[in-house]
Length: 121
Image (cartoon, rainbow, N blue to C red; front, side, top):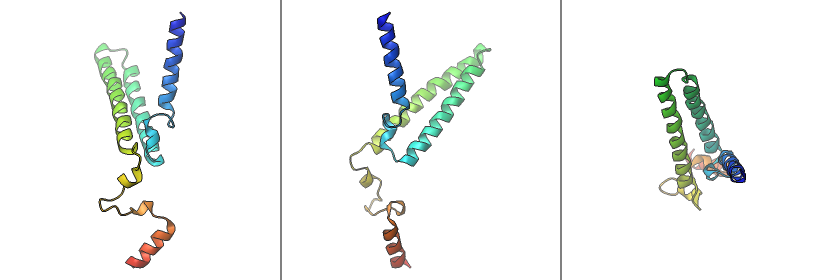
């Protein structure tokens, strides 16, 4: 009985670590990307569980719900893995720059934007 209780506590801790954006692999991504991926994953999980729960009355259609839930598990795994691969680097700011290593417009400060506007204008 104590082993089952320890298992449940470990499962709950793993669940909360997965949902905490400061602990899961989305922590490496910029805030806007983290927010977008969180909203998309939550929406698709709601759709998958809605299909699963809504089709419990019909065994044939219930398979579609199971496929949706399993697919979302793999999609979530792929998103977290790709986020860690892309944004989990030490020098992510260099990785996100243009191929010639120039700053993108959204990375410039206000003074740099004004200077660039004077040079181009």
